[in-house]
Structure formats: C-alpha cells, structure tokens
Length: 211
Image 1 (cartoon, helix red, strand yellow):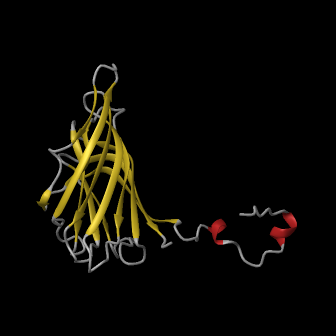
Image 2: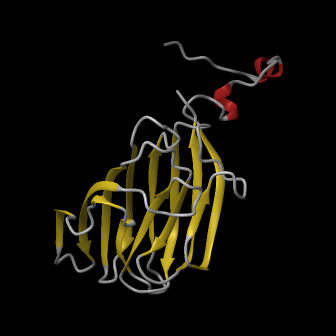
C-alpha cells in the first residue's frame, strides 16, 4: 500500500477532514460518560440518564476503570447488568476467569483458574478485580468490553481484564469473561465493591463504532 504524504499546501486545499483525523473512522472510540467516585456505594451507567448512551448506537461498549480505591480492605470490584433501566441489577450470568500474581518479595507467584468467582446461571454480581487493598497507595485498574447489549436475539457477552494491588502486597492480573443469559436488551450497568463503598476513582464509558 502506498504511503500518502501531506504538506502545508495539500492540507490547505482539503475541503473535508479525513475520518482518521477526526476520530470518526470505523472502530474509533467515542467517549460517552465519565463517573467519578467519592465514597460512592456504586457507579451506575443507565441508558438515557445523565447523557449515558447504552443502546444500539454502538455494537461494542468499553468501560475503563482508573485508580479505583475501595473504602474496605480486601474486597472485589464487581459489576452486574440490568434489563429494566436500573430498577434491578440481576441478569443471569455464566462466567469464568483466571489470575496471575507475584508478590513484592518475589517469593510467591502463580497462575490459576478462579473457581471461587465464576458463576453458573447466577444473578450475583460478577467480580472482575479480586482482593483489592485499601491502603493509601493501593487501587485497581482495568477495562470491560460489553458486546451488542441492545440485541434482542443473542445473549450478552463480556470480557474484562485488569490489575490490582492486592491487600497482601501482590500484583494480581485478572481475566474474566462470560455472558448475560438474556435476550432482552441490557440498558444499564452497575459497578460496586463486594463490601463497602468505592472511596475514589473513575470509570469511563466509550462506544466503539461499527467497522
């Protein structure tokens, strides 16, 4: 493929800006909403509320977790889905996950299936980052992709990955995936800790344009 080069004159003569420059090209991330925690019981993204879009506008939605700090020690960062605009977060899910870890002293490490956090046709919240510590410098970060939540034909797949500073001074990387076993449109997502509040941190929601 030939490489196209632009100079000052060619850019001056452009009548339209290429999609790749504007960020409107297929596959581009479009920022929708940022929620910031401050001793918050949960952070919830509800379609149609507070400028949140979670419908058929985008085929894929991406949530980014940035420096999520729990109020309680050794807790899980979790999520659940809703099909009734947040009245209930109780979608039935089947999920699985695994983790890799290494402690600061380089004396403990491992890679294992996380059987204690998988779900089999359960409406419980799904943990995506496990055993997060609440010391001043401890937090978690990561992302979750939700695929075609507005479908009324197929189940709702998700994939998450992230890293956290465990309560016992370990770096732990977690991968979880699964599906919400519903053909109803998912129109809200809620994030919370397994116990206590989200003390601080941000969650950003993006839409990914169709290719």
